[in-house]
Length: 477
Image 1 (tube, one colour):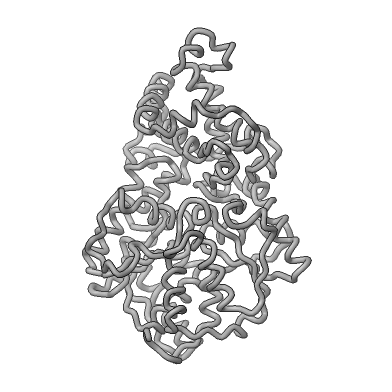
Image 2 (cartoon, rainbow, N blue to C red):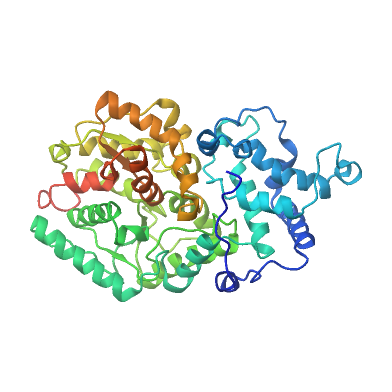
């Protein structure tokens, strides 16, 4: 996929981010200087540059390599694009005999390779599961993107989205009045369909929970069905909640571009709004990388969260929240409501390999599955080599969910489609349950290319929404 590159960021995207508006004149010198700073700052990056022995364990583990056949999409080869520059400027052998150790200058050819192939990595970390040395190629990709941003070579899609979050509070640029209207419409829709006044409150101080969903949940199918499911769970449990108009988005693209400063700023607005609204708990919706950032980084970036109720996890995943209520008998689910479906589950990469859920190891795998099994009668697993910690990325993660990379996205989903088609043929699967907004957006777009209907895609809380019995045993018992 040598010819496939992302659209470059323009001055209007880069300047508000604090990045140079365009490629700086002395970009080679500045890029090497930035790499040197990062090698000192991130010890892991230095280790990842030195430790690879090219054993080949990762070569066939990347979904983009499997889908495209491009050797530069082998994780080891993609990282080599940075290692050869590292050797040239930061190792004695590379400085004296660059040709012998395959060290290369950071020149125009290498920069274009970086722009191309470090935007053909979704940072899913599947390769790291199979690396005997634990090399995290996702961190190499993040570092490369951070270096490119520092010399004015940014990616339009990611920088544009981060800018919207900083100014309006969500990836989609939804202003507060539009969000309020959307939530009112959904309340009316739920009332019409169920006869129950299920609320979706906005900016209500004193609520027990602040819900932070992905913004796709506010406007598009199938995402919105999960938002309705969350609301029904809160309603039935008798737990008050609110959505914040300025912390209305869980996603954090600061991670995708490797910027801790932007990741911290994006996360900070959530902590600030939680304090301002005086909530006792923060619950994160169905968004894979958002949960990784919340679970793994929030406390470091903006903690401590000691203003929240210590009896509950801070933060808490919506699946963890609903599962706990189910265990305590606060919810009644009618499995027959989902009888039209034979369901399978796709583990989202950032949840599976970079976070946890609930009090027990492996909770990120078991809790969503237990919710699904409690909501429907027919559940089957895909090939065990493609699920749990070995799950394949949907092909749209890591800031690659953009139209100019559609051909890559279609090829990158191939391993997951192969496993999905097997259970569709063998077991009659017709519902792919997810807990990630990017996975939902990617699959609804690309599965039809493989003759799989987009209606196959849905959220775990969409199944909960279908099955939940409103009005029965209302409230926590």
